Length: 139
Image (cartoon, rainbow, N blue to C red; front, side):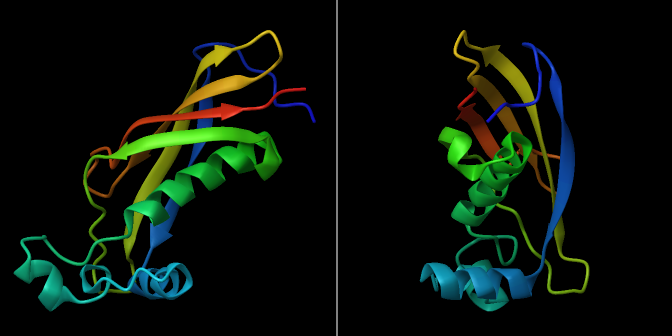
């Protein structure tokens, strides 16, 4: 498998992903994470959150899928690491919350592997993932 030709500093074309409350309920069922902060406004606000929030692992999965799509093969993603920096608040409406994903090439190794600095920005324009790095296998 050959990755797209890139050099250090290149920006990877981004994409927007919209999350709705229905997406959160589906993810809760699939993951087994039924914490009510991910579906109940009353519970989320009672614990001090601004509203229902997306699962952190769902947000990370969206970013990892972005990297896998760029690579052309999910098996090419050797590693993905991040910190969760702020929640994605998902309103109870038909529009949901948009997360903007992108990446910058941090390094290209001799074996063709590429290290990407991945970004995920919430609807408020602030990063929801911090220090997100993906290493993608080359050749």
